[in-house]
Image (cartoon, rainbow, N blue to C red; front, side):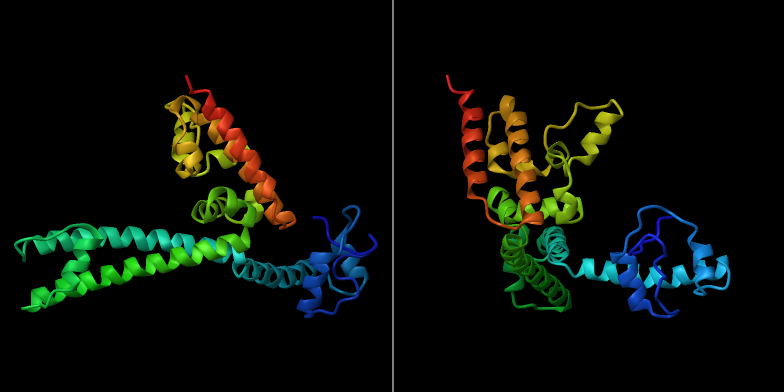
Length: 283
């Protein structure tokens, strides 16, 4: 284990008193050492610990709260809030649609005519119940409508937040795709560190694993297929379009994480590249 210290002669515990967890966190996060050393022996020699076991007890006492606080700070970061919101939006949308089909099936047994989907749930929610069964059906339909409206509110939040968290990524991919890429990667930092080839197939993990097992061809794209530059490009050139888009999205994510300044030239370069790719299909 390499401990962190200011001068390479003492461990993280140098100058600390037992129980000073805030000081220990600062030392663990910010100090450094050029090479490993016999830190338990040094801790005993410095009087910080009575023996090796006591040293590791102290190290455990210091690192657990440090890790817990770091995790809590990470969860409160803007990109993590964006991840929670896009996942909640998708969950709300999926659940609303599933329950809407249940409402339609139930309504078909109660009324002469019934629509399907969210519009059908809205129609049922507007009815005046005539018996206890109708009350429960109308109540369920009203909850479907409320859940669909919550999904819409979440989408509005995602569209606002994505531009603040990752302005370049949002400009190139749109707010929903940007949020989904960040969510699939686990955060903007992780996404920024991925090569473009990995970003290109994010969301296509099942197809990728099938390919690795020799059961399917290599996927050309994952969630970025939803972008018009991939979806609306001729099938034979879709792989090239996906690579071009993934390359620019990767650059955008890195700029967003490491500097945060807007780069309008990325969008112009991508537009020109896609135009050249699509021109191959022209007679």
